[in-house]
Image 1: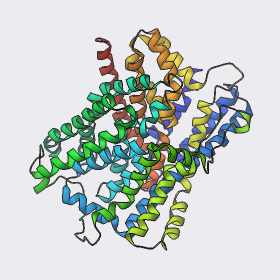
Image 2: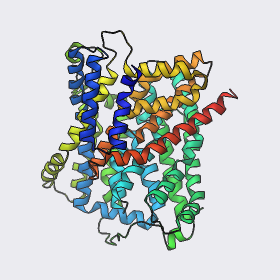
Image 3: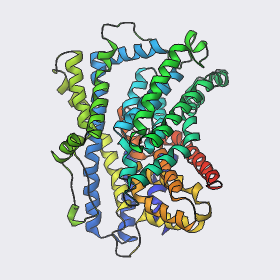
Image 4: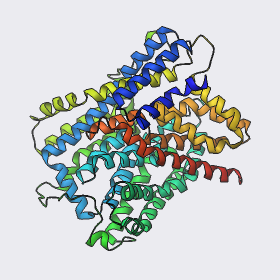
Length: 528
């Protein structure tokens, strides 16, 4: 039965990662096989399978709505010329793509993660990187890898607040987990900017014999930025609260990064005189639009996301009005799908697009033609997303069965823990990654595995806080390899059908991240 339970993991890896099928085909086959296994082997009632399919279709809608908002943002900025002005601004600061990568993917993406989550960061940063001259494959891969370290805390601490709600809801306990995360992730988080630069140069750079030199020259600044981020994350978790780590850490680090670039601190001279670049694209010097006007849609969406996540009365209004959630689908209390329409990042992105149009060109006449073009471009993505979610929801809802078996994810966790509890702190991040790989969410991965992680920690006489921190960090790193994140982001940049290629490029960084966290966790257990 363990092979059956693992099929939701093994099938996508084989069909997308090895055979290189496009997601529409590979995930359709995976979903069909998991459905058959759920019915014939796990003995799930037909009604629960149908409810899972309905749930999947409904869950796809808010994701597609966010994707629509991200695509509208990109298309409108291209239409108004704002994207060229933003690029010119980046090039004024630094034309070095290694530096731009850290600023856009790691720091700006981290800020978007802190105020939004839901897979939004990579959908926002990948198009920006393409406009800067990155290839679509490089932009998607690097955006996905970068959206890992900040995702442990997600949108205003959601992975802890909601993800650990089945374990302990006390704020003191959640704060202690947040502090453990920043301690455990200090090493891996510090090295994340350097890892991004390494992948950019050695995977996507020109093989001209200068790669090693190009990498070494940026090591001091990359490590410094990673260290600054990790220190701010640690300070915020101990001085304020876990809820503000993923907002304040990237925001403060962006300010420090810009200052160091202006002062040329720890940066090689040739990053300014002859910057490293893979692009032959030239940036227009036209500056009719101010930088503030060009950035206005992004500024608006960040302010709206921040306000709606931190101002309690506003959040309550948005959550309770135009609530399109579907509860107790076909009578199953465990099968639900949330879509708080006004609170959705997709709605806020669309509002920001409308306001941006009014600010930049003072007319909305092109909104609907562009919206129609964007909606039509999402058809194959919608299919790939729905079949992926069908597989996910059958996998997670498999606790509803006639054989009295636990759900497939819990069955996997129980079998693994039976044989590996002695080195569980090393395994814990990978269980978190497994959850995110399938479900696409740090929060849902932690909701699924949080309690069993806590139980195993108690049985193995290991710190519960340490193991749960490893779960959350691993789940965050799982964003790199989550199939429906890959499907969504590849659609934004026109790489539909290349999901397997992207997965092969992100899987090794994800596993390395998990291994680093596991080793550091093991060292922690020797002293606490």
